[in-house]
Every structure is written in structure tokens, then in C-alpha cells.
Amino acid sequence: MMNTTKTLLCVALASALSACGGGDGGTGTGGVTPDTTAPVITLVGDADLSLEAGVDYTEQGASASDNVDGSVSVTTSGEVDNTMLGDNILTYTATDSAGNSTSATRTITVVDTTAPAINLVGEASVSLDVGSTYAELGANAVDMLDGVVEVTVSGQVDNTVLGDNIITYTAIDAAQNTLSIDRTVTVVDMTAPALSLVGDVSVTLDIGATYIEQGASAVDILDGVVDVTISGEVDNTVLGDYTITYTAIDAAENTRTITRVVTMVDTSAPMLSLVGDAAITLEAGVAYTEQGATALDNLDGALDVAMSGAVDTTVLGQYIITCDGECRHFRRG
Image (tube, rainbow, N blue to C red; front, side):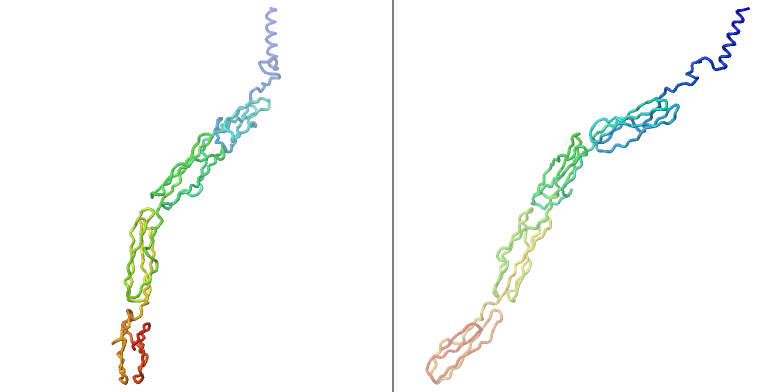
């Protein structure tokens, strides 16, 4: 009977304690569960990124969520040096109100995959007259990481053959990134043949004289000797200037023309002929009969002849009769 009473008292006491919240029941002090869980950080974007050297890094950030506090702030530490190849570590940290802290990292790897930029000095397309010397202007190159880099030039220009010649410019940076660009040098024939007269450029001929064409010669820098065509005529019966034109055309249709001026002049006096003898003996007292003279000019034909002088048949002696054909004098005595 006594044992049964003790059991009932223990059960009643335990029930009373439970109803009043007694005992720890596996809970913390005062019955509140402690917060020992750190926030969860989520990166915006990838945890591993590649960044081209020289390009600015844009931070994408991160967010953090706590099981008690909800959204909590994230602090970021670390820097990205985009001028140095290699890894840069950024650390993201979140701490909740219970002091639980966690961190996450992002690795930004600076790489160099960009070739230098090449700039030609001068034009990318150049025309060069055949036979002319090509002057190389060169090029310069700048790399985003290495700065100024050397440019190598390859290719040749044959200035004796018409057509395109390719000059190649190549730049290589320290990471072996390579870029090449070209310049096209086109050899063209823009020069007319050299044309030279045989003889003088100005010729003077007396009226009636025959003009003898001496010709001209032409040499082209590419085609060599080329034909010369001659145009124009000389009328040796008419005073004045006559132009003879000489033309040379090469295979590329480059044309050169020169001229010769032939001037017809009258420098010959008329031909004067006496009718009868140049010396006449006349008996005193006998009348003198003038027989006259004729004049013929190579341009004007027959001309009048002016006579001057007189014969006094009453006085012995010598008398001179002058026939003036404008430039000659004949005497009769």
C-alpha cells in the first residue's frame, strides 16, 4: 500500500512540473533555441571570371540570406589589377545579428588574348609610277598591356613590272598575340614616252626651198622604243610659219607631243637680166636706144625694172645706165 502511494506522488509531481514548464526538455536557457547558423552568400555572376588585360573590371556583387535575419548586407574586399596578368581574389563576407559570419570568393584572372593594334603610316593603297623608287613609310603598333611593340615589314616592290605588290606589317606582343595588316603598292604606267626631235625645233627655209623632214625618236621607260607619228605640212610657196607635230603613245596610252616650227621666208633678190650687151660702143651723134632688162623673183615672178641714167651722144665719154631690180645693179657703158 505504501509503495503504490509513492508511485502516484511521483507521477503527479512530474505532471505538475511539465505543466509549469519545468525541466530542460532539450531546449536552451529559458526555452529559446540559440542561432548558430551563418548567412548563405550567393554570388551574382560566376565565381571564376576571365578579364582581358587593360579592360576595366565591373563588380557584379553578391547577396546574402540568413535563416533568422533574412536578407543581410555583404561586404566586399580585394582589388583587381587589370595591368598585371594573373589571378585576383575578391572576398564577400556576410554576418548576421547573432555574429555568425561566412565568406565566399570570386577569382578574376587577368589574361592577354588581344593582339597589338597596328597603324600604317600613310595610305593602305598606294600607286607608284613604273620606274619610280618606292619609299617605305612603315607602321607603328601599340599593345594594351605591353605598350609600343616592334613592327616587322615583309614584302618587296618591283617597280619595273605593272601590278600589285603586297607589303605585310606584323606585330607580336609578349603573350605571342599576333596581328598582321597589308599595304598594296600598285605599280602603274603614268609616264609618257620621252620624245626628242632630230634637228632643230625651229627651222627657217627660203621660199621655194624643199623642206626635208628629219623626224623624231621616242623611248618609253617600260615599252622601250615606240613609234612616232608626224602630222602637219609645209607649203614652200607661201610665206609663214608651219607647225609639224610629233606624237608618241606607249602601251598604257600615255601620250607625249612636241612640235617643230618651219618658217618660210623670202631672202632671195629677184634675178635681173639685161637685154643686150652689158657694154655698148656708140658712135657720136647716134641716138642711144635702151634695150631694157628683165627681172624674175622666185616668189613674185616677173617684176618691173626701173632704169636710171642718160647718154649724151654729143659728148665723148663713158655713161652708166643702172637697172635697179630692188637689190642688183647692172651697168652699161
